[in-house]
Image (tube, rainbow, N blue to C red; front, side, top):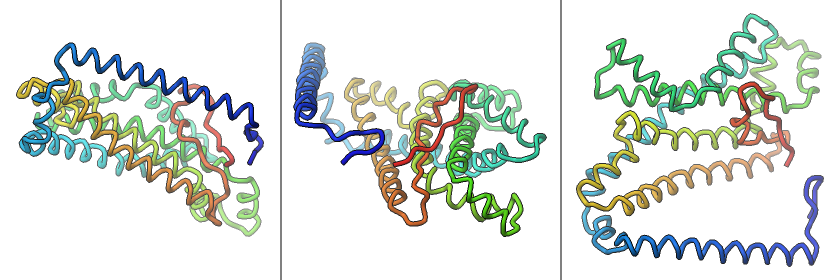
Length: 297
């Protein structure tokens, strides 16, 4: 099966692909063997460094599960705030009024250009200066604020790109039956654009969840990542702890990406969809660059 951008490989191309796959697997195996050999030389493969995760339930109930709970708490709060805020900003960027479109565009581009870690640090310093947030809650507030400011601006671009992928005839048809701009946006464009932007939005939620680790590494936020220091101090197994924490992140994010793949498949086959899907990497467009565009399946 072929498409405009992809031709079905012939016998020679298939043979080359198998050869490239074999070479990659061999190189990957060699890299794993080298890593494991180094870990063995440093006594990082000894059983006493790994068995606590199986035999000692306290390592889960005291450190890993509470840390995962804080990670999910910060991620969910940031998602709940960033999604509607980003949608409003994205719609505002499409306004016919320059006094709305220009300031909102400047805000979106400003926060999209600043690293999320810097936004977290600024937020923490601001809360310290204001003195309105207790020291116990300050890391959580700072992490959520940084995530919301950055990801709301990214989601705004996803929403704008999703709406712009719709055929021009949708807007023309709405105008022909006398619908105003606001009615067209709410009842015609946004419902259809959701089918194009949902995969990218879910992918951005994965980014939000992973970026909570920045707060644990820098701001003292008691998330899953920060539990590495406490577990290592008590069990002297830094490498093993990092591997287990990484596996937990992989499991959680794999569940979210699986949801994204499921949604994308459903949306591509939905009769209500337009067939366009906004690419997830629209978030990576430079602050001064062009807006992401939809991609036909």
